[in-house]
Length: 525
Image (cartoon, rainbow, N blue to C red; front, side, top):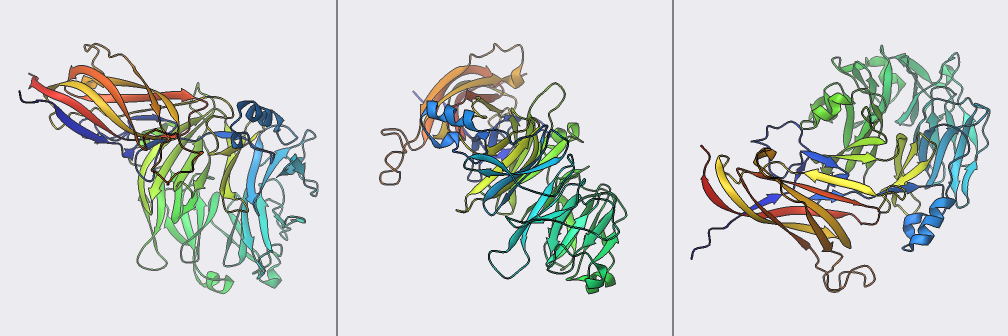
């Protein structure tokens, strides 16, 4: 008897898509997503966790659960009150700003014994800090940290000496700081930009070669662009400064790049080119073939509904170079707590998809950097005064990670033909035991169709090819790639899947594809 079963493969790629019509959206996209990310090598990966940080031993570095919780309870907040106002990584060490109980500002460094306060001149509390690192000298040991917070003088810190920057005649305080061509640029929100004497970040004397110019709008950021240019980001427009120094800057007008839209404050991220959030969505400032010119390109097609309802809620953004990702952090929608994150994953210069994460803690600031051994570190401050280290462990600071994604309805190339679905085989890569729930939906989830039960799947991952894994890091007799079988008996024109997990102990796992087996029935009339 001839086997009438058919097989269709759904490759999980393309990321979150909230805009494409249901009949034309690719079957491997995600219509909903929580705490999964697009893997740069393909598939959808449940994210890593995060944990509190103050420089002491990290909870996730031990396999013993009792020791892990002991380490967690020993880690503390930087002394003070309110949210974290800035986090930064300098020379492999983590720093933060937090208000003190008397209303002054405090500057702290993470050490093996916890947070240590750094002596500074008296500084006001409040504000929001932006930092940058730069080496103005020829020595490998002369890199400095520069900071600006909008309520105090900008400063330079070399690891031992904290120096405030005085700008002659200026009574306001810079909010943004960036370096171009060995000049330190400081920008006030009111549209004024100052640049230092070349190679001297604390000297703003005009007689020595420092200077200033006006941008004509409220500034929301400064960011270097390719070719030695500086992008001046404003709320309602974007301009670009060209040239190598004051002589060239004085001969060239501040070129208006785009006077239709501007950039949201703290949304600009540099990753091969400049990306920022504006009223059209997420936009890139791309260099054109003609040197010294730029073109804009919007890349948030598919997630613009997410951005529209969160307009005005952006908190910060960060680049993960280890994962080839840009992440934008938003305050939660009404009725929700924590933070929502929109993540764009890249392969080379090509954006491969968006995903959405929801953290338990509300983040105030976030930044990435490198430890002394070159490992990437991402740290964030929270509204309740913690500093968290991201992409660590299997939990949200000890609490379970709830994760799911929903695939579009797949019609197997025959939108109007009834099918009887038999089963689905999911190709998964896991690092250990994974407990999942998978629910099929039929016929656009028509209420007239009987609801299918939820399938609970237990997967043992962590296998390795012989001689390719460390013997204490993989599970003997486990598959290199695991296959999860789900019985999905049901009838309809199409089928979709919701995949769900919730655990504080499961390591990240990746879904690559699904093989759906079915038989064809008659046409719908």
